[in-house]
Image (tube, rainbow, N blue to C red; front, top):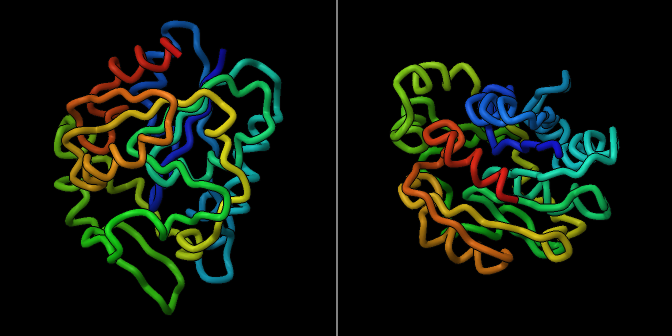
Length: 231
């Protein structure tokens, strides 16, 4: 088995965001990979109105899935659920999708159709540049309040401006309808309220809850490792 991690919005260096859980999986002989998402400027092209968007992110994940046909658990975080809905479609090697504080869009839905309808207070949108990002001063209190101080200190180095077009681009498939899925509700999440997560989770095959913030794979990596191994 291998694990493919798909990170959330407005960050880069996916391997860093997943590193605590990935290391524990490696100790159990499970390899993992965290593909770079072009819309976050991770592949050389600048993020922006004319830069890469959701289709390029989907293609990046699909390329990793094409590399071999080893049985795979795909773990998607937050915006990563939008990418995964389309990217995992049609791959028999994907045996399970784990969605962490994430989204399960129907075909034709976009990220902008989720949430409470207004711009999140922790985001900074630059309409002229066509990008959005996390306000650095709100990063820890919103997303990492239950993480170790060293993780909190390092996280700001792995933020990214992302092409705002990803919020409006619809998905062309809904893999969670064909692939077994589990939703991990993060009950102390200050970014995506638990009540919304539970609403999203109704579409998943099964639901698990953890008393964590938005990044349980950093704050409680052993619990996330055990959940992944159980799948």
